[in-house]
Image (cartoon, rainbow, N blue to C red; front, side, top):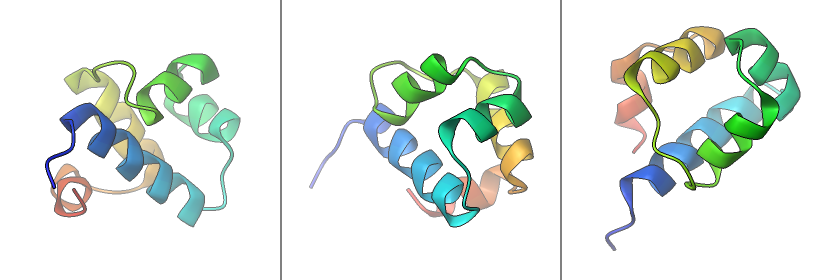
Amino acid sequence: MATDICVRIGRRIRVLRTQKGWTQAMLADHAELAREHLSELENGKKEIGARTLERITKALGVKLTQFFDGI
């Protein structure tokens, strides 16, 4: 099933975040993002930029290669 890339990335962020037991506010704080922006990313409503993705993966403690393995 083909799903939009923004939706798949958002789902992956949510899975990794919930595995850590973090709320959106906690991840947003660690990645220095607004919680509302993170919510839009997780819901596939906005496209994620490379720098933002890097900040999120660093905050979650995963490498980019690990992140994309789950998509």
